[in-house]
Length: 52
Image (cartoon, rainbow, N blue to C red; front, side, top):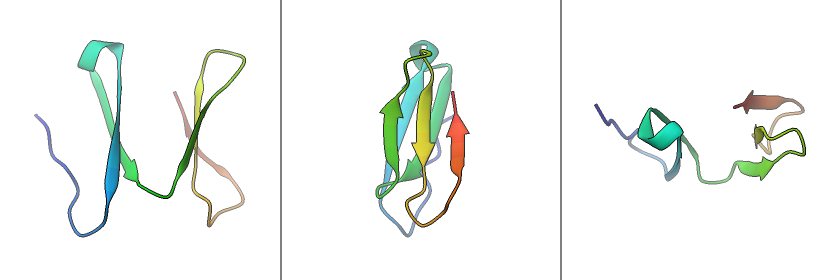
């Protein structure tokens, strides 16, 4: 089931051939890490929001 959040602009991160879908705000920073994970950061916070 796909559900997109409404009211603000979002992007979607899809992993594991579509088994994982993560909608995140357009202004978040997303960057691959040397360890092979992906880092999602909310620019308004001083912490990492999620790693996959």
